[in-house]
Image 1 (spheres, rainbow, N blue to C red):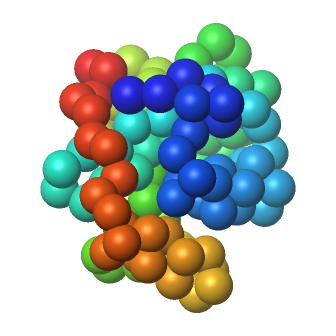
Image 2: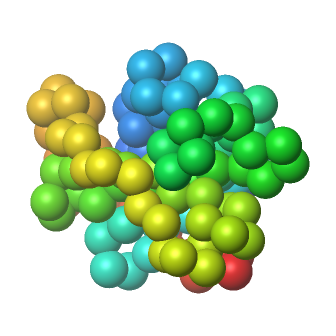
Length: 117
């Protein structure tokens, strides 16, 4: 598990840049990679939820990447959204970004960690 982008492996920097500049601008406060191919970023400064179509008052969001499928989506840390297992619509990861992340994963394994939940 990492903290913000300062602890982010170089191999994941392209995904972090995509999150912070195009998907949901905000600061990455935590990140982790699970062994099943998921890379997850927790954001600070952006709580927009696809489920309620507005910002949550207190709870943050997660941006989830699945490298094998080449897709990403938003999940919430809000208890009500979690109770219904809400997941936003899936979107394709930009091809150039996906290519960099997959190439890095093939060169050397990106360190994995368990989910903070």
